[in-house]
Image (cartoon, rainbow, N blue to C red; front, side, top):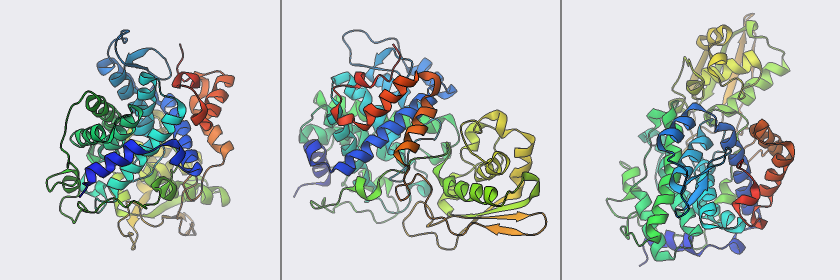
Length: 454
């Protein structure tokens, strides 16, 4: 009987662009465009600079596989480039969300770097992204209960294996070598929820992209790993599903639906933890509809999920990084600025007296129906109490704007892309890059996207 590890390897090695539905390709291209823009916007953040200086290495020599740092250009060894770019992709927490994590923040830096190093074209990049997504989704479905509540950062854990599958696909590994690549990646997977709100969270994501690429590169050189690393009684699924009944032996469903079509991508409208986004939509709508001023507010109550509350650990944030994991800040920013954007996720804005004064007046409570097996509750709800005693309520908000269920329009996606890329590129280059991603399967190489200044 074929093992889960072998079946995952066969799935990854055998996938072709022609087999991927058109809508799945569109979702993948959206992930590329949105993540690349966020990566460029995040490239100047302190965490990215530290990683680039400490681990980015010297410029690559002519004999080594290399890739570009974005957007400033300059070639580095491919392992160094993917690490730096991966940190940049997640440091703003503005990248898309799905599969209990951030698939594009791992897959896009890994695929771009590997494709640049090996000369792969856009069609191969789209196929590689979908390979990584589908392997990630299959493993997530076998691990019971939210990984966050066990302390694991799913993006860093599952993303490592997804990136290995994606990079292995770009290297055209056969099923045997692909099995070694993903099994090796299984031993490199790690990341903790306890490090949310610090530089380490984005480092975990960059490291997942780097580790996946490294695993594929080693497997291509005939490095070996266990043939049953995922389904073994002491393997990946057992380790990360510890304490609960994990689905190790179940064979891969050959008629399985495309998970990228079922779950899609949730594109962020705000650069902070996705656990806050439904509540932000609700709060801004209430504040604008009723013309509520900050001084009018006595209290804001947010009903949300217990796992969301676990992730939103910072109740009195003092920095922009801490504020990314604070429901109190999200509501305070909505009240004070009527927006929660890049300009608000700065130390200066977080420390504004009116923002800090608002924080103690915001309370979160767990909703009674937490949902079954979901990381997020089935809805969020916001109530704002006026100092006069009057209260206004959002009702149940099930989907954030930009989610798979309420997607952004093409114009809205382009607007976010151009806002993130900003002054890094001339307007004509911004437009060309966005259009290149929207037609990614037709481009000849990463260089054609012109993402790095030379």
